[in-house]
Length: 143
Image (cartoon, rainbow, N blue to C red):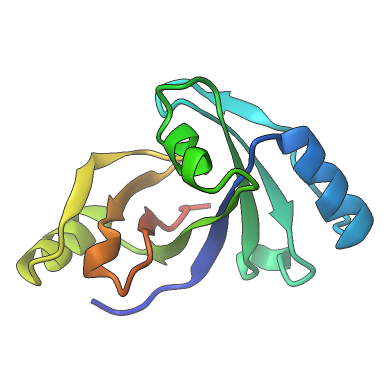
């Protein structure tokens, strides 16, 4: 498995609206996408572009708010009421090849690959197998 580009850092938040104010007014973010719901994952998300985001080579901050109490993010926020870093996401050229490689290494894949917030296939690897970090693996966008 070759380390791909760091696509984003997922940050859980009890309120995307409040987090947008923080990232815009305190951190000086110039571009923040419009929040959108992902009901199949039980979350609302939006992306904060970092200054080096141009030309698809920069890292984003993904703000994640639970849509309901069934959301896994709701459980994270129960333990971390202010929110915080939830996961990191790396790109790979082929999601199924990456899944097979992680499994061959004995890493636990959490669920089957599915469409993520960027519209490409993703899966998560258990934090206990990844140095304590929940790790999202994302197929690189084709365009």
